[in-house]
Length: 431
Image (tube, rainbow, N blue to C red):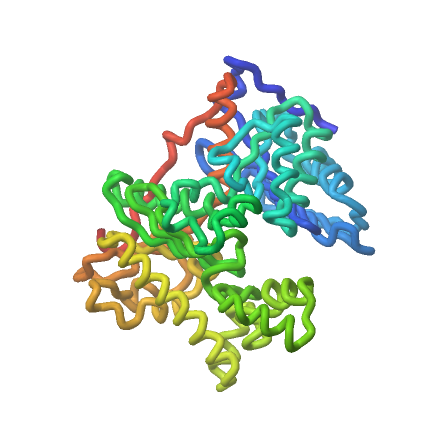
């Protein structure tokens, strides 16, 4: 197995290094080898069906994809398979000068407001936060532990999904329940998808050539998981997800906002257990629960065929989204830019157009021609007359993690790579 470069203070590798970004889920490992300066993914891949009878590893490098379909019994075997493919297919990690491994962790609680270099104490703190994110933090932590064992000669940096939203005002972060109960059990609004919201809001400012501090933004991260944020001058002041990623917008399989008494009603009268309710709200709700389908391509096909359940599901999704846009307009007082991002936001012009229908009196509209099709580059999709720009900006959480990892090891005494050379392509459309 190829050795990985070990960065040292003043190392020459820092100026030309790459970052291996690892996102470890319960049954998968997604990864990218990222050039933090140019922003490109040098290689990427995914390990799927970890622990099942037949697993798979897909590795892409140099325009070619290599797939293996052997069993992957655990995360250690999965990451070993990834490193073997780097050695077999490329790129050679030593020649790529890997200077850090960046890890995504979903929940940093009230403990972590910035990325940190991993040590045993950090591992213990992440583990202690697992009750706040039992579906996410344990597999995230497993990936960190395995990666530290297999790649011991480079610093490992953790970037938290919740960190960007540590700036929420107390009025926005506090649930109106007994304060002692809330304090004892960490019950408050933390927010998620923070890496994406931070990257996209910063990218908007660079693309427009404006100071981030001067812009009020609403960012709509729409994928199978979905969240909205209100960002004032680069600082998050509201977000739709709460203590967990379940609150807020209607999502692929999650309900989003729901009267908590519904859960009491179902437990008392339908005999649902806590685990049953968890499964219902996280896996059998949202678009899946309403229409039986959470892939927007299939959902649109059903709508076009006259399927009433699918039409209602889309209407509910859009109604909730538009409601949050209006609420965040009120929070911010002035909205300079509304930005769509993530899988649905970048690729679904129907959702983008319908989400903002009827908001013309607020100076918000979508131009049909500019909105057409998928958007792979930052694009302005509003007409010239609007007071609020509407944009599509592709997110890049892996690049954001890579750059935060570099900044973190630099602060710890390692010479890294800043993102000052980030090319900010001009948005198409009016400016």
